[in-house]
Length: 87
Image (cartoon, rainbow, N blue to C red):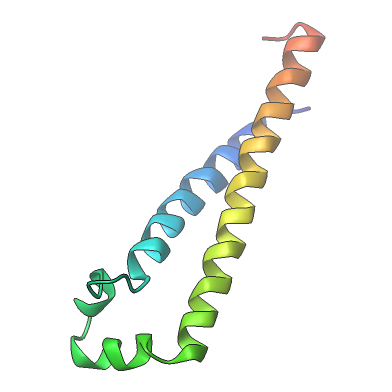
């Protein structure tokens, strides 16, 4: 496989890592979490909404799946490179 494939997966991994961190921090915890910092009462009323929480959960799971797939893709790419004797 070409080297640009690995670079694409690395960029995707970095972007999804940042997004996953932000999405996890936006989740409402027992103490309100960091989501209460953005807008105070407005975000707490939105965070209490079941629709907003479900959408945040869906986005977090989707980004997590893409993050996991990019790690697996990088691992497979590295294994193929080692098997072909390039690396």
